[in-house]
Image (cartoon, rainbow, N blue to C red; front, side):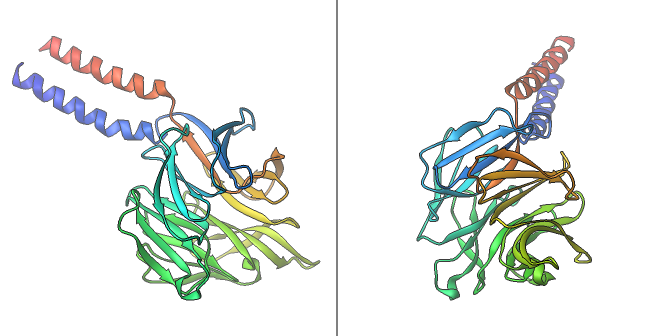
Length: 314
């Protein structure tokens, strides 16, 4: 083989290596679905974003709770039985436990795929141990980045290097290692918080509050605020307990789960509220782009065809 041809092969290989992760993460096409955990039934399920095609991804789990996604590796992560973190492929295959410990994992779980870390809220009972922990995605290098706070909800901004969480009446954030802590929002709109998610495209945080004064009484609600801390507003109030919340900037939609066994959907500004799925005892929810096999296959074939043409031409 000529040196020039070998160089072309190496360049084509590098191109494939550069594009394959993008395809695997859904950036180059795929089917967008909503995933959720069902604590009571022991299932992880999914559906298309029009509400059709409901199917089981995993069953027989031990009270699956918080849910998160690693789009680069096409993996879902979840808290199982409040004492372990598991992961699996998007189709539920190759499920494996990556970390276990004493009972105390709470409602927050977040993945930083670029930094190779997972974060979760921790609350075994002793207030000195309450807080946030993190580890590598394989469960190694466990460390506490925040202690002494009863945290709820968790979200990570890997691009700005920030982690967000809530305590009663406050939304807080820090650097990914727990340093440089600050209060982003405070007030009655963060009473009894449960979940938080970020819209990094539009610089917004969304969270669920258990009870705040609407002027006509105390109710739960969905609230949002700017990530620079300059504005917060209530989008929706309801009487049922709320669980997780998921922002889908691509589709311009907001999803949340509640104790009414429903997944709700609205526009990002709170308009056009509707029942997305009924009779679904969902807890953790995530919108995930599932790569189509043809995406990877066509990309690989295209790369091989390019190599072949170059070799024949040389």
